Image (tube, rainbow, N blue to C red; front, side):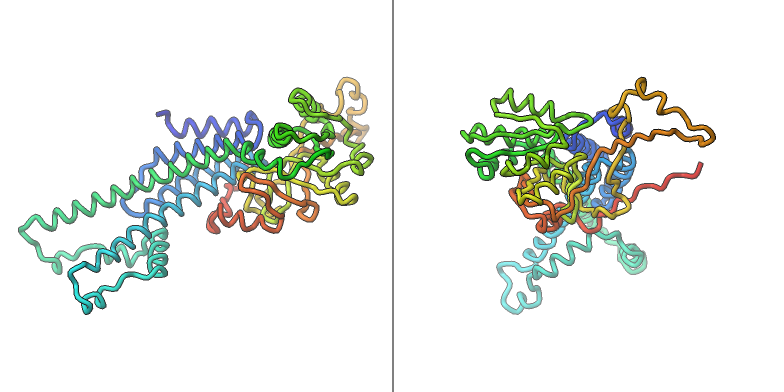
Length: 417
């Protein structure tokens, strides 16, 4: 297998140079990279989960710092950390439950059963969670055998018992890595098939003779609309072009190729056309913990138009886009500026770009933001690969996917030059 650091450096370069298009591809490749990191990480006999968590955190910090705007990277890093904790907790619970059951043999009488009670679920869970913490100094000192207190025996029973415990620890270590990798394989599969799972719900939301409005280009939206068409739904689609990149032109072409009636409009025409629309269906870059949406620039305008005319505003997003952070979190960069060349031709506007006399700054500034933020009050419904959810339910989904201890993966502060 290739060296894991080579894979990490290669992926970091791709993130920095924006060579990976789309949150789905970014999420899948991040999960695959972390799977390789876990596979090649050597774990000690004690605190195996801690070793895996430290390895994933170290790589995760580098990945998040490489492209902070791509929130899907941080989402997957935190999902993997949650998987490690859950799998270790499951193994510890099973091990402790097995000890509790084995303490009561079939041939013991009732008095002996009272002396060796089966552990309660609360005790098992508490003991299992304690295995996730690093050992304390007192525990380490207590585990050191005292040569004067422990008698030396000539039999091989102690050696065999020690070998048995060592084998059990090694077996559990391999079992933890195996279970984590299996869970990562399932996560990668979920990311790969999220479009299909979301599209299966299209027929429940799109009805006959409706008019759907969308903006820009989203593969999730494309598959969602085409799935409704395949279910014999007859409807029309308005596509706002999504200036300045005009991704809506590509979506309109794909929709027409798939046999859908499509009307291409300018972004400025959204308010003029919204009164004829039954539903707005859009994709998202990320869904924040408060139910807000980071989406392609222009969608906040569409959401405001939909609210003004009481049109449902529906957001399609795979579960890998659910971010456990809030918009005001300092780790969240809500936007990035793209090249001004997407807005104007420098040759034609070269005179305007000249520096003013004595000002040492250009007379014309060009700002080309990539994303909008849509607050949760403007969103009617989220449709994910797990079903439809209200914005107020997003925090429950996040609780299922992330651990509280992993909500902040610190980025290293920039070094002073």
